[in-house]
Length: 86
Image (tube, rainbow, N blue to C red; front, side):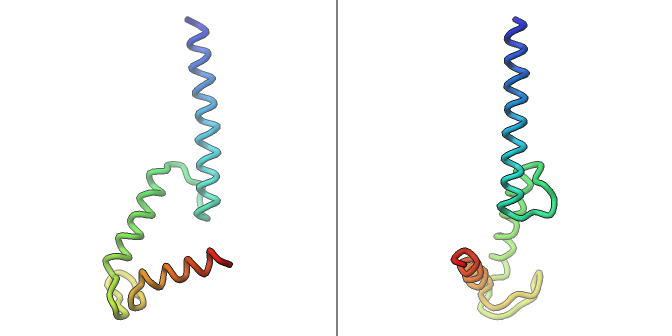
């Protein structure tokens, strides 16, 4: 019985180490200002960004939420490709 408790504690410690390392990697990939603590908050931030971009995807400049050029999704994808390829 005691060995099961010890194994559970060791598994918990290993899980925490892996979780911290994963969050550190996410912070580096996404260049976050603060370390990622909860992955769900990062996912929500990304999804919200895409949703907001979709809401303002008009063929002309607009400032419905923030000032954006015409077809902002196309512009953002071009910027992403340029940054990815360089």
